Amino acid sequence: MRKILVVDDERAIVESLEYALERDGYKVLRAFDGAEALKIFRSQKPDLIILDLMLPTISGEEVCHLVRKESSIPIIMLTAKDSEIDRVVGLEIGADDYVTKPFSIRELVARVRALFRRTSGESPSHQERKESFSVGPFVVDGERHEIRYQGGVLHLPLKEFMLLKLLLRNSGRVLTREIILEQIWGPNFYGDNKTVDVHIRRLRERIEPDPTTPHFIKTVRGVGYRFDLENVD
Image (cartoon, rainbow, N blue to C red; front, side, top):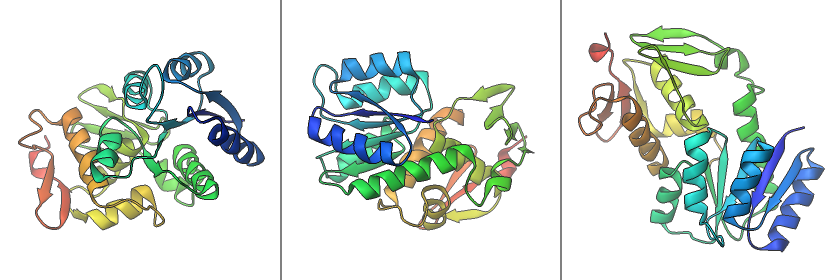
């Protein structure tokens, strides 16, 4: 049974999510502040975290940042903030999805299911997700669910792994932001194109010798992105 850590200082929200998620077959772990969340994360090893940004003791942003140093576990940010900058910050620090309050419990549970499908390969694209191939120094191992670069494994959060794999599989071809959103986040994603830009920037920081002058992931102005074969040895 998959374990989900729900972190929010509003007990009513935690209990509502616990009821809905347990009905859907998940085991729910509860935390009401940031310090407790980190303790449970390290001791119980949940499979996904639903994380409020506004928390006592340690902020949700800091919890997310610390979790990302140790794990690529899927994280859904949950917050009352709804400005564009807050959404971008949430994605910048490693969240895989972002839901603002008030929210639909049914929608949130659907997003949890979608993240798990992508993680486990239970979606219709299961065979594609398990494919293995190489592009220059990058080796995609679908069975191990990892990408190796220059002999080492890239430790990537789920969305960055999927995004890099998509770019590598289509190396030399331009992918629009809309296509990337549909392929990685699904047709029912409620965010905007800036989500793609944030994840591209994070990928560049991991694989580019100089992220400010991309060697591999090129921007095609006004269109999208292309993984550049010409610069891959």
